[in-house]
Length: 232
Image (cartoon, rainbow, N blue to C red; front, side):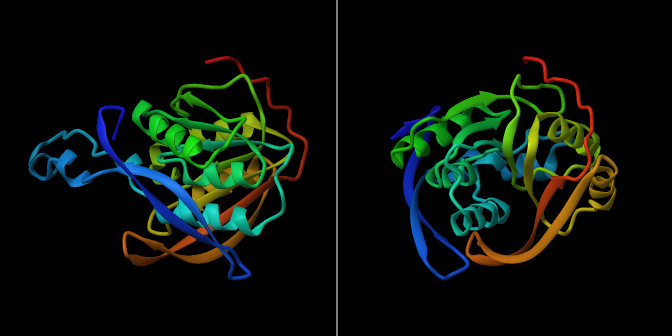
């Protein structure tokens, strides 16, 4: 099978909740990913093309997905899976009853997320191609999922502004931090914007190893007059 011109395969991802129960999610991934990555170019070129990071199931996405499966129903809520990649976190939110929008700057990622949503029999979801550093959506969301998108300090201010602008009143942001990136200034900025940060340290699998990650649940504590979002 091919998705977006790339060989694709489907696998079962077991999401384990806090009570120890597990649910299998069907997730499409790139088959034989290594053949699409030019290691020599990555090591030797001054300005190499970015490898398809969206095609990996990062620990942050699995942490968010497991936390969602362990949490209450999301029926009636709208969820944005920002930087969705393969869409694991968004699929988990949809399985909990949410209406999910998968968003990523890479059209190939959205094609895979859409295929996984369909493979799990989900309804009421959509996909939007966007770059949070420059684009907006004419919607706000009850919950924004942002798994492993805070790794580039140059984008921290744009990310904070996007999250603030697109979160509905009373909503929350679930964001993962991979621990090895300096993010103190980003979370200080979010607190300055009126958010409280509830932090949970987690250990989850990633590519056959166990990885430490940190799940931040950000909620707005004060009323801030964010302007209405404009269409992309």
